[in-house]
Image (tube, rainbow, N blue to C red; front, side, top):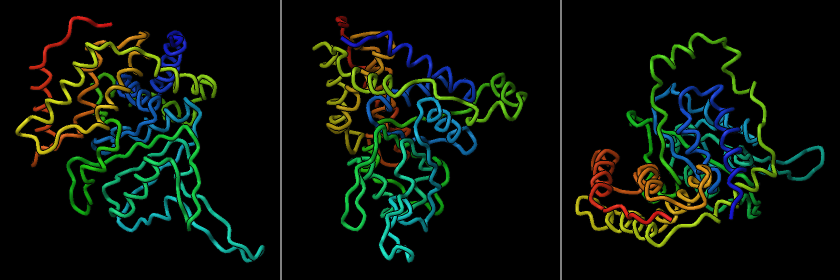
Length: 314
């Protein structure tokens, strides 16, 4: 069984360190940590100026990963992400200049502003964990986490992600606004105190390697597994949904529950874990026409209310 104390310590170190910069968003940081453990990626839909870049920079500093931010624009090319082979006149040879995807933690800011071709080059790297340039394939180094953002309100000059591409994101999250008291704390603190560059790495490479593999030892009872699959099946039978949750989505929820249980200090998954994580893992995988995200959330809420929760929890 996994060493639960190591998971609890890891969570406290990372979430506590990020809390020095990101005030009042421990829940979101913990969910990003779940994605990180499961080798998943995050789609962050939120208003500009809510701290998306700060969040990921703080997380990268905490776990010790190389961080890169990419501003997506309509003229961004796939080679701007993957890198290019350029001719070195001094050596008389072509040399590869790696792009920003050759990092551990990447913020793909406003991903829906880039053309579908450029979006696809990013999503290929996310899925395959490799990049091919001029016929030469290079494996990306682990850990590898992409957080893509998009503005939920502005649609002018954007190329929305198709459902098949959105399905490749492990979770969809939102930071939201801080409370009035939390925002006053942020406004009154010294500017230097709120910079992620002041954070130090709080976990070792060995600790990260352990928690990113040992969560798979967390047990899921047959009752909890059947409850999880009942939710998945219900999304596929819901008449108001164009598409239900795919098998990839079911796998993501299963893995997320295992990782979340380990971080919570348990060697087994509870039905409450499934209920809590389902909106974050499944919400963006359900298509419901216009106002899809709102309609999908309402349908998922109804499904969770209708399906009986099993009494056996281990």
